[in-house]
Amino acid sequence: MEGARGTVATAGSPALALRSGVVRRIGVKPKTPGERGLPKPEVDRVELRADGLDGDYNLYRQTTRSGDPEMAVLLLPEEVLDELNAEGWPVRPGDLGENFTTAGIPYDDLRPRTTVELGEAVVETSKPCEPCDNLFALPYVGAEKGPLFLRAMLHRRGWFARVVRPGTVRRGSAVRLVARRDAPPVAPTTGAPSAP
Image: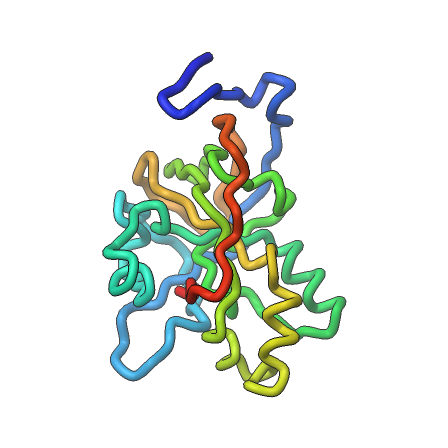
């Protein structure tokens, strides 16, 4: 089926294997003067609006990217956190600024132009969130280990997404891959801050 931005692969087609998982954690951090956006504290439920999560603020998105709707949400599979912990980085959910920590869907399956149901809401992934030096503020990183950590995080920081359908998302809500639009791969950006 042709869509406005390319071929749409539905979950039943060979182009997109149906995957499902669960929302393990929801992270929301309001604008707080003098504080960084990391880590994001956990909430049990959130209203996902067209412009992002109710009560969440991303300084980079708002000030540098003029509220870019393609960056309304940051998704990160908990499996990435498990890998980082196995590599010696004690990363906890929320430390990387993700809004939704998911389980059961591989990182690469969330590549750009993938439509994802999150509870009542629907999002479409847009681009990777590349690591930046805001991560140096994590207590187990710091300036000395920072460059090594950024290399460890390359292509594993999570996926930004735009909101297709607002709705309520709860911890434990189902996550389902619904469709994927054929699109050329998005080249990762380097050197630009992207931390929530």
